[in-house]
Length: 240
Image: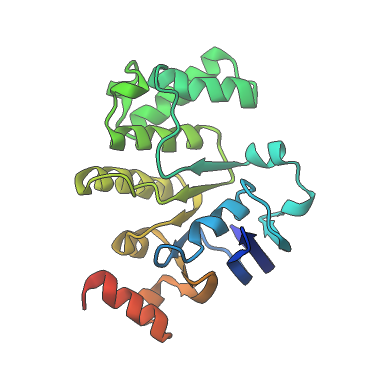
C-alpha cells in the first residue's frame, strides 16, 4: 500500500487534535498506529478512511486523492472495522454479509452466499452462519465484522481498536483473525494498544503523542526506539 499525507490538521471544538501530520509510506502491507489515549490515532484513521475530513492538508491512499474522491466510491474500495462491531443484531451472520454484497456491490444472492460461506469457513466461523448477530459473543461478532469487510474485496482495511471492548481471551481470537488477513495478502492500517500484536502483524509503526507523529519506521523501532517519548511509552506498556 501507499500512503502520503501532507500538512494534515484537524480541530474539534477549538482543540487541535492533529497537528501538521506528514508521512510517506510505500510498499508496506501492515501499518500499526500506536500511542496513548488522546494521541490522535483514531482521528488519523478516520481521516484516512474518509469517515471525517481534515481542516487542512492532503491525503493520498494508493492512487486515490481523497480530496477528489466521492465518498461512496471510496467506501467501495476500503473496509473499516470499528471498536465495537456494527452488525445488524437481528439478522443472521450470513445475511449480515450478503446484504452488503448485494446492496453495495450488486452481487446476486447466490454469489453473495458463496463468497460469505467461503470466508466463514476460512476464518473458522461457519458453525455460526445461521445464528443472529445478537446470539454471538463479542469476539465472534468482531470476527464476523472483519469477515464482512473482507468479503467486499477491499484494497485495504482500516481497523480502529478492534479489541478494546473485549476480555483477554476474546482479544486473542480477534487478533488471530487479523493475522489471517496477512495470509490473505490484505493490506491494513490498525490502531491498537496491543504492542506485541503490532510487532507480529505489522511491518511499519507510527507512534503518536499529543496529535503529532513522534516516531515512525519499520517494526524494529519497537525493539530500538530512537525517541525518549517512544521509550517512555513502551516502558509504561511493558512496565519496564
